[in-house]
Structure formats: C-alpha cells, structure tokens
Amino acid sequence: MIAFRAIAVRALVLISVLAAFATTALSVYANDIPPGERRSGYGFMAPDTKAIQDDDTANPGMLWVLDGETLWNKKQGASDKACADCHDDAHTSMKGVAARYPAFDKELGRPVDLEQRINLERARHQRAEPLAFESRDLLALTAFVAEQSRGVAISAGEDSQLEPFVAKGRTLFMQRQGQLNLACANCHDDNWDKRLAGSAITQAHPTGYPMYRLEWQSLGSLQRRLRGCIFGVRAQPYEFGAPELVELELYLMSRAKGMPIETPAVRP
Amino acid sequence: MPSALINVPAKAKRGDVIEIKALMSHIMETGYRRTAAGDVVPRDIITSFACRYNGSEIFRAEFFPAIAANPFISFFTVAKESGKFEFEWIGDKGFSETASASITVE
Amino acid sequence: MHDVNPTSRRRFLSLAGSAALCGTVPVVTLRPAEATPAMLAAAIRNVVGEADLHTGKVKLDVPPLVENGNTVPMTVSVTSPMTAGDYVKSIHVFNEKNPQPNIGNFYLGPQSGRAQVSTRIRLADSQKIVAIAQLSDGSFWSTTVDVVVTLAACTEEVL
Image 1 (spheres, each protein chain N blue to C red):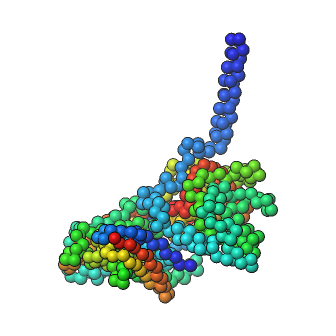
Image 2: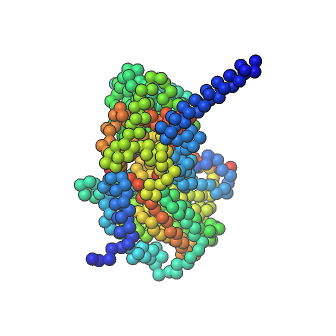
Image 3: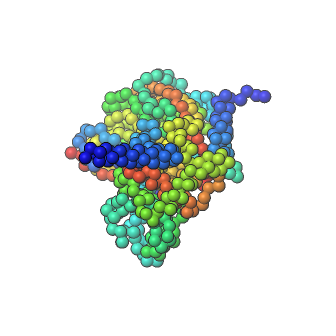
C-alpha cells in the first residue's frame, strides 16, 4: 500500500516538473509577456489623455461612431438594403463581434478583419462598391460595429481553422525587418516598460481599434498603425488589406485574449 | 459628413449652474503644414463658435489654428428656463454648422 | 556663424534624433515662421491696451508634461462671483512659440454662472501659455504656465 502511494507521488512530482519545464521553456523561447503583466495601452497614458477616452461626450472617436450609426441605417448598393435591414439593432446583433475578429471566412479560406468583413457584406448582400481603406465611411462603420463590443473580452483566434494564420502572424511579429532591423517583439515584448524618445512603449494590444490617435488627429485603423510602425523601422509597409497585415492583426488580438475591447480608444 | 456631439443635461433645477459640452468634427488645418512637394496646405479652421439659450447668446468663442482638430469646448451657464440651446460653428471656406439641444428646467 | 536659437537647435536635434531612431525624414518642415516674444507681447497688448495687467484670479490647468502636442487638454477658470455687477467678460489665451500667438478668445457674461472654459489646444514646442481675463470692471488679470511638450517618437509618412 505504502509503496504504491510512493510511486504515485513520484509520478505526480515528475509530471508536474515536466509541465513546469514545458511552460518555462515555451515562455523563455518566446519572451512573451506573462499573462499577469498584460496591460492595455490605456494604462500607459497620462490622466488627462485617459479622461478624453473616458468621456463619451468628449471622445472624438465617438464622432465616427455616430456617423457609423447613420450609415448602418442607410440603404446602400444595387440591393437598396441597409445593414439594419438584415442585422436589425446593432446594439444586440453586433455585440461581441469585434472581440472575435479577425475571423475565418469560409469562402476565402483565410481570416479577414472587421473592415474587410464590412466590405464583403457590402459586396455579397448589398451589392455595393467596397469602401476604401481608411475612408471616413469605412472607419465610421467599423467604429460603430466595434463599439458595440466595448467591455467584451477579446476571444479572437480561438477557431482552430485560424491556427496556421495565428502562427504566421506570430512569425511576422518576431522577425526583424527594415533598415533598423527591429522586430515588433523587440519593443513590445522586451521593452514595454521603457520609453522611446519621450513616448511610452506599450505592449501593443489592439484593444481599442479603430482608435482616435492624437498624433493622427483622426480615427484610424489597426492596419494604419501597423503600416506606420513598419514604416518607422524603415521597412516597406504591406498594402492595406494585405494578408500579412491581417495575420499580424490576428496574432495581436489572440495575444490580447481576455482583455476588454475599448473602442473607440484614444491614444497619444 | 460633419457631425456634432452635444452634451446638455436633459433636466435641471432653476438656478443650477450646468456644464455644456460640444464636440465638432473638423480637421482644423493650421495653414502651416506643407505637402511633400513643398506647397503650403491652406488654412481651413473653424473660426467661431456661439451658443444661444432661447434666442440670447450666452457664450461665444474665437478659435485660432492652435485649437486642436475636432474642436471640443466646455462652458457653463445658469439654467434659467426650459427651452432650447442652439449652437453654431462658422469657419473658413464657408463652413457653417448648427446643432441644438433641449432642456427642461423646473 | 550666427547664433542659432538653442531651442530650435534642440528641436532640430530631437527631430533628427527621432528620425534616426525611426529612420524617417519628418514630412513637417521646421516652423517657417516662429513666434517671437514680441509677437506675444503685441497680441497681449491688442487685448489689454495700456491698462495694468494684474496677476491672480486666473487658473490655467494644463498637463505639465504633454503626451502629444497635437491635442493638449486645457481648462482656464477665473475666480468670480459671476453676478450682474461683478463678472468675467472675456478670457484670452496666448502661447509663446507656436507660429501664431493666439490660441482662443472666450466671451462670457453674468449668465455663465461659472467662469470656466475647457478645450483642447495644439502646442508646437515646450513653451509658456498665458491666460488673460477681463472683468466687468474693466480690469485685466493673468496667469502663466510652463508646459513641456514631447514629440512623437516616430513621425508617420502621410499615408
């Protein structure tokens, strides 16, 4: 009896040691931010900037959300249908949607982000022209849809069909690029507690997109931000809508799993 | 599609000092930026904002290029009577927008 | 070699420094027309004329360290009973180093209840901000604050 228990205990100890080693090995390899230390970009801002985001009547991003609400109800395209005609009240039908994007599109066989989903819906159901990336209308609709998920925990990337694309996004995040030969991870995984020329380096969790960036003095998409960063390390940015950008978006969102959506966020 | 976000309390007691907030969508182009080719991007700003309470002006502001894009303004007024607040923005290139909000004062 | 204004040299170096960090050439050119203290003084004189400028009563609330000079929250308030006989007529805000000295002028009255205005302003560089209030009795009161403005680490190409 006692001998049996001793073997069982030893086995348990061995299993737990192996498990600990596996987790440590993974995290050492990745230099990932430990889940307990993840912080939204909100936490890196000065109180005055946080106050702009907190007040819906003073948050400039809400201007786009309001415009988006008007567009939601506007009849479009050859089908002369509004989003509302199929999706009814966005407050109910769109709640939680932004939290699980980018999502897999069966027809295309790859992930699409929210902006692309809106354009796909326009093409497939409204028979309308796609809206240009970063156009006011597309930003407004995306902001309106995403705002319906404010407070909802991010769950993007859980679909098993997305696994290879999350992996691709992770590779892109880890690879050095550009004349400055920097990877996203160099700043956002390894140096997020430091500053770059006076600005705080954040952990790069896309919790509040489309967001109002003070530097842009406008609302903008995550793809715009990614292109800006890639340009910043002196690499050729991918075109809007490129699969690499969507894979990066997907990886970033899955890396932020569980954090609440803040759209429309305000950032410096 | 210019849009305005107005925040006026729906209800107030007579004599209360209430805060009014207004946010207007506008690029507020300073007139000091240059394109890659070197040409000046011409100034395009909102130059004035006014608020009327049941017809009489209670607040006015003059904006210069140093006011940030999507100009936000907050000011106070004494809630006198029920009625309407009317807001007007005037700017370069014939920019002219209005908005209104009602208040019940008991 | 003429004496280059140390502030503009510092700004050029910081721009160059951030360009080196991010490898971009900033699209924005160095301020073509820099405001001078004389411009600020002239703008103030435009409002105040030859009257005395008292210090006090006015409070300027600006973050001492600004995250982005494009959008700086600012609140200006004046201690005043705001009655028909004693109220704030107007508040004028000026800056020291933007291309232009004026920021905004705000006109109030006894019906305002409270002499407090908030808005968001642009600051091109670390500089002083001056707020001047004119009271109903014709007197002028002012306050000055120093603000530090950091530049964004990577200026973006206009996409």
